[in-house]
Amino acid sequence: METHRILTCPHCKKRGFIGPHYEFQSGDCLVCCACGWKGTYETVETFEYHRERVVHFKIDYHVIDEIVHQYYGTGNTGNKWHAAYEFVAVQECGNDTCHEFDVDGSEPDAWAKKSVDKFRKDGTPGNLSNYDILNLLCKDGWLEPGIYLVEVCW
Image (cartoon, rainbow, N blue to C red; front, side):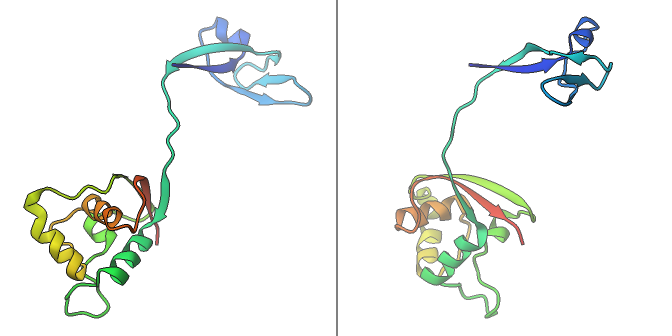
């Protein structure tokens, strides 16, 4: 458990307003934006919280698309410019988004066996989610196990 600490103006603290409302001046002197007081600020503990460091892989969505298209195929869509699998379409996500997946290489449940076989044959995702597909890419050796942040930006 860690404690969040902030610097606050002693005059504002007496009035019940605790917050980081200061500007830096020359040297170490601080000036309060709320009351104009100059001087040394007090450290105040505001709340406790828990945090942990998490290591993850960051990857662009089009890299996932390229791996699928190059090594599994583009599927039979009848349109040479449109592949059956596209990360954005399967995720139904918008631009400037980030999606987290905990990838361990596990295969989807038995009910998805036909979709898995079809995906491995020609890259058609069927009813597989991106989570399922990333786990298949891991199981097949294209990705390492771990937490992936997939960024979508076009």
